[in-house]
Length: 222
Ligand code: SF4
Ligand code: SF4
Image 1 (cartoon, rainbow, N blue to C red):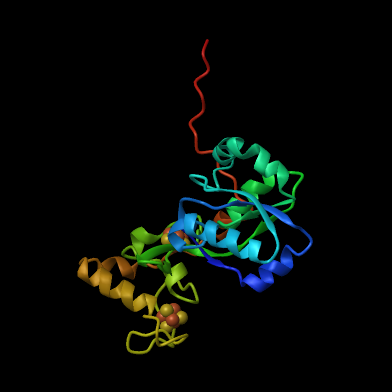
Image 2 (cartoon, rainbow, N blue to C red):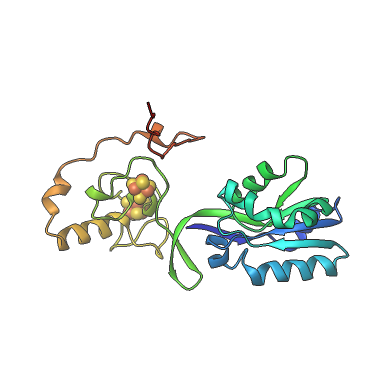
C-alpha cells in the first residue's frame, strides 16, 4: 500500500490561502488505512476548514482514488458540488491527487497529504517500507528480504564493513539487512545459493515515468 501522512495544517492552509470554497476527495484504500483520507479525516478536514472561514461544498470517498476513470464516474453524483467549489482538496496519495488533476483540468487541486513510500502495515497504523519498486525483483535470491530497500545502501552482495552484531551502521535500531538475509537463507537451507553473486541491477528497469499496458491484446474478430 502507499503510505501517506498529513501535511502540517498551518502549511497546508498557506497553500490554499487564495481560495475560499473546496470539494474534498479522500480514498477508501491506502489513505483510509493510514488515517489520512477516510471518512473521519474528511469530516475533520471539513470542520477544520469551516473553522478557518472556508466553505466545503461537498466530500466524496472514492473506492480507489488512483483509479482515474472509476473516480471520475463516482464523482458524477457530486457534479454540482464540484462545480460550486473554487478548488479541489485531495486527501490521498500523490497518484490520487493527479487523478483529480486529470478529472478537473480547469480547477486547482491541492494535496493535504505527503506521500512517503510503498509499505506494509505491520501493526495498526504502523508501516514499514518493504519495496522500492526497482522493476527487477530479486526476492527469489535473497530469501524474500529486499536488500534494495532494507539496506540503507541498497547493497546486493553481502554486508558492508559497518555491520555490527546484527545491527546496521546507519542506525542501531535497524537490523542489518544482510544478516537478516543470511539467517533466513540458513533457515531455508539455501546458504549455497548465497555463494552465487548477484548480477549488477538494471536500474533502467525503474526509469521514470513508467507506463505499463497490462491488459491482453483484444482478439481481432474477423
Ligand atoms: S527487489 Fe525490487 S521489486 Fe523486489 S522487493 Fe526489492 S525493490 Fe521491490
Ligand atoms: S550494516 Fe547492513 S544494512 Fe546497514 S548499510 Fe551495511 S550492509 Fe546495509
